[in-house]
Image (cartoon, rainbow over all chains, first blue to last red; front, side, top):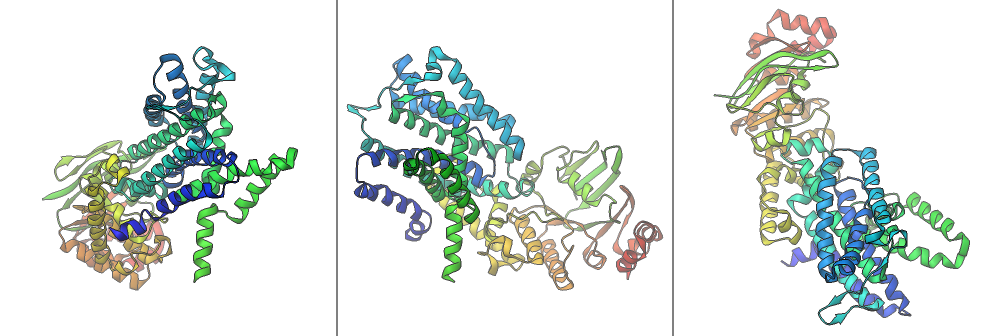
Length: 314
Length: 262
C-alpha cells in the first residue's frame, strides 16, 4: 500500500499540496481569481490530454463541450428553475451523450481528417448557442445564477479557488487511475499502433469512444464551473479560439503528461495577465514566448524538463 | 483436428488478384509454414486469415467455426493472435507494458472501476504484470522488462512482439517473418522460441524467407506463387519439388533459390 501511494498517487499528493499552499503567497484576492481559472482550465485540459496525449486522437472542437457545460448551468436554472449543481451533472451527462453520438461516426477518421471533423463539431455548438437567442441570449450571452449548495451561496474568488482546486485534484486522480488500468494501457497502445492493439483483442473504436466521452465530461464540468464562477456566459466559451487554447495548453504542458496539463493551463492563463503591462504588444509577446517554449522544450514543458533532469542526474 | 482452415480465399486489389483461390488446413499443434517468392501473397494471406482484410471470396474457420469477416479484435478474443513483418511495437511504453497489453482479452474490469482504481483493478494489474513477466521469460527478455520498448535492438523487438502475442494465450499464433532482418544468432533464438511455443500446444503458422529456419521447424510447408497455391507438403517434399525451385529461380533470380535450398 505504501509503495502504491508513493508511485501512483505521488503527483496527485504534490498537486494537492500546491493547491493548499499557494494561497499563502497570494498578495491580493485577485490571485484567487487567477488560481481558480487555472484549475478550471486545467480540469478541461486533463480530459483533453487523455484523448490527445494518451489515446493520440486530436479534438479541435473541445470547447463545444465546455459550451454545453457552461450553458447547462445557465439555461437550467434560468428557464427551468433547476438547481445549479443538478444542472452541472445533467450537463456532464448531456456532454457524454453528445460525445457518444458525435464520436461514433467521426472517431473512425484519423489525423487531419479527425481534426477537421471535431473542428466542425465545435463550430456547430458555437453557432447553435449564438442563434438560439430565445434560450441562450444570443451573441450577448446570458447571466448565470450563483451556485448554491444547501444554504451556502458560493460567491467570491476564494470560494471558487477551493472548489476548482479540489475538483481539479479529483479529476487528476481519476486520470492517473485510468492510465494505470487495463483501459489506460489499451488507450496508450492505440496511440502507437492501432493494428497491433486490434490483434491483441482491443476493440479500438469502443476504447476511442470511451475516452472521447470521458474527455467531453471533463470539459463539460470545467465549462459549468467557468460559467458559475464568471456569473455570465457568452457563445465565445464554445468558440474556435477556446478550442485552440485548450489544445495549446495540452501540447505546451506536455502530451501524455497529466502534471503537464496543470502547467500548460497555468502558463496560458497567467502569461496573458502578466503581459498586460506591455499593452498592445501583449499578444505578439505571448505568441513569441509560446514559440520559444516549443522550440526549446519541444515535447512540452513537463516531459522535456523531466528528460533533461534525468539526463543531468546521470 | 484442423484448428485453422481457409477455403478458396480470394481478394482483389485494383483488378489484381493478390490471392486467388488459396486453401490451407492447419492441424492443431503443428508448425505450418507459408513460403513463396516476394510478392507471392504470403502477407496478404495472413491479413485475410487474421481479419485485417475481408476476402472477396472464400471463408475461414477457426476451431471449426466460421470466422470469415470477423474483425481482428474479435478473432483475437477467439484465440488467434499474430505478429507483424514490419514491427508494430508500442514504443512509448516499457517492454513489460507492451506485453501487459497482450493480456487485454483476459482482463475483466469496467471503466468505472478503472477510473476509481477499485481493489479489483489493483489485483488485475498484479495478475497481468505476473503473466506478462512469464511471457517475457519465454522469449528471454525478462531482464529488459523495465526498459523503454524503443530502446531494444531489432532482434529483441522481434521477440518482444512474440511475447506480446503469447501473453494473449492464443491457440493459433501467426508469425509474419519473425526472422526477417535478424542475424544468424538472432535467427537461432527465434528458432528456439518457436520450438518452445509448439511444445506448449500452440499452433504456429509461419511466413518466413529464411529457408533453413522453415525447413528445420515446419511440419507442413505451403508454397505460394503469384497469389496461388503452387504446392504443399512436408519440408522434404517441397525442397525437392522442381516447380518450387523454378518459381524461385524464375521470379526472383538464382541468388534467393541458392540461399533457400542449400
